[in-house]
Image 1 (cartoon, rainbow, N blue to C red):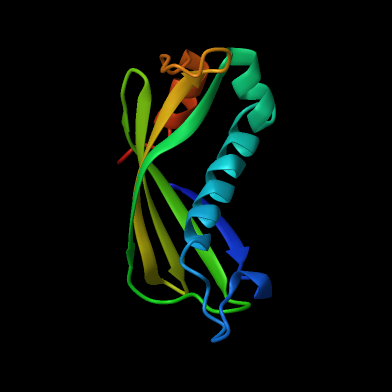
Image 2: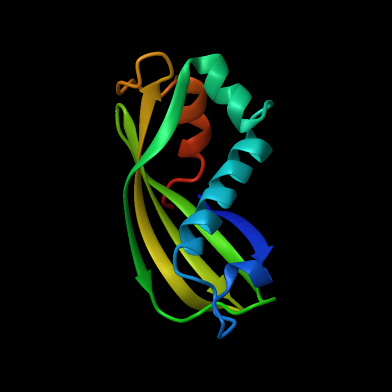
Length: 137
């Protein structure tokens, strides 16, 4: 399967004085992309999908490798691939590019939690089936 792709433009407030996107914003870009994946591929919003299943998902681990900077007003693309779906967690990779050049690669582990207890809980079938569409080819 193909990765989920999301484009956005680097805004002025996300940059340092040299007009380079501040490093912490790359996690935000990935979060925006995965939220939009939910928005586009479920009948409900992210919050409604999670709430209706009694779960939420949290980032348990993130590893980013910075290869080149994104700059103010550049259009960047986040490509997300779901690498593994476990019982209570999923692993994703992200590549952030600009004009075909890789800027950042990331590996993330998400854990699903029960919204009442905040304890790990199995990934609901509805979410598992949709996220599997973005698995490796």
